[in-house]
Length: 512
Ligand SMILES: Cc1cc2nc3c(=O)[nH]c(=O)nc-3n(C[C@H](O)[C@H](O)[C@H](O)COP(=O)(O)OP(=O)(O)OC[C@H]3O[C@@H](n4cnc5c(N)ncnc54)[C@H](O)[C@@H]3O)c2cc1C
Image 1: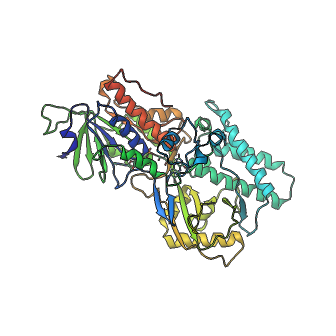
Image 2: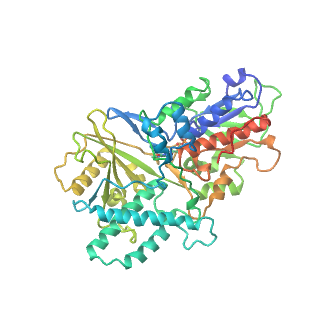
Image 3: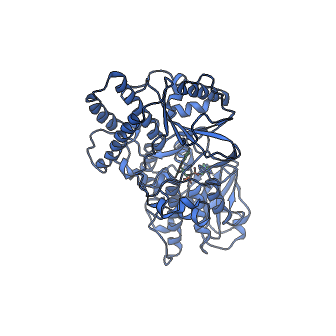
């Protein structure tokens, strides 16, 4: 194995630390460590050619579009992403206002501006409001089962369906309206699948569901792109700290590795990259996505992880949620329209789909957000989760564009609706260093599995032996799936190392 040369060898002493991954967790950890004098020997190894990971803003349609993270969820003082974004002056005035920070949304997606049904008519606003209120009150009720040993059913989906079928039995409207109500509810199930990043709410565990914590504040976006934030963090690091295009293949740990340039020194960890380069280290902070860890569990660690840790990685859920941007010559929506809901009248949360994915994948699409126009450009952003979203990734751009044009013509009742001028989409499941979108607590797992994943290795032994530390959104028990959870997890692990080197250090944690 060829050993790395360069920056670290030329630097002063101190433990050699490697951070694997330059998403917001890895960048946050690196920023924290770089600011402490005990860590001059730091490197970040990034598999791809860019930093930011699942924060990914691209120029498109005359503006910026977010292929990954979209909003700051709960932009208020308790949210470190909000605080950093404010510090770097990346937010709009309204988003910074006290008023905005105090708004409590309960984490629920706002009501659509318009709801189109598959038969080409608009759905009555009254029915949509009634069903949204039913759906979100049931979602709120799931908190009652937090930490309950015997939740009535294993999953959020089963709980919602049980409650809905009881209520539906008492609906007195005609058959057609009752069917439409279920179809509207089905659309809210699809929204919740996007929020949780799962194929089905039947996969999401009921008892721990309420542990996910919603911060106050009305979700906001970055006018210049989310990636402005990771770019600012990156710019604060010494220039050569991040090594791009360096996919890590195997983390050899519990060893005693030498390096030609540091005779006499022993390193407990050796990080082997796909290209054969090896980096010896005292400590490694792993921030790779859970999807990547799941796929490479058998080869990524040598020796393999302790069985309980490996089991936690298998059990915690990691699903796919994607976005499809459509650009139109002219808007077909009203000027004040912000969110278009699509309701498939033949769908019900109480019935399983039996057709093959190729015929029905687009029915999982929840509808579209209207993006703020960039200089006379008109863009809709569709959201789709689950196996249907993964199937969508296997189709060509032309196939996706054609399917969505047909959907829009059908639901607007306008067979001559002009096709979108162009399309852009995310493909997070096919991304080899992500393999999905974000984590959720799956049936069969609990928040304890998240804590187990976050525990450094080796499990036993003196603190000074800390070799592998784990960060990334999936390691945060209450803020998993978010950018702030990821950032906090990076800070947590950096602080763990700082405390090891400098027990007197004043650390701002605990980072809960
Ligand atoms: C479509 C979508 C929408 C989202 N919307 C929101 C939102 O609105 N608000 C919100 O708060 N969150 C949202 N999220 C979630 C948020 O983006 C993530 O939780 C967060 O960005 C994860 O950061 P991370 O550092 O943990 O992981 P990542 O950003 O995934 O960083 C991990 C890094 O590790 C690298 N890597 C992987 N394998 C290797 C390897 N073998 N060697 C070296 N490097 C490797 C990857 O290339 C990547 O750069 C969304 C995510 C997606 C996909």
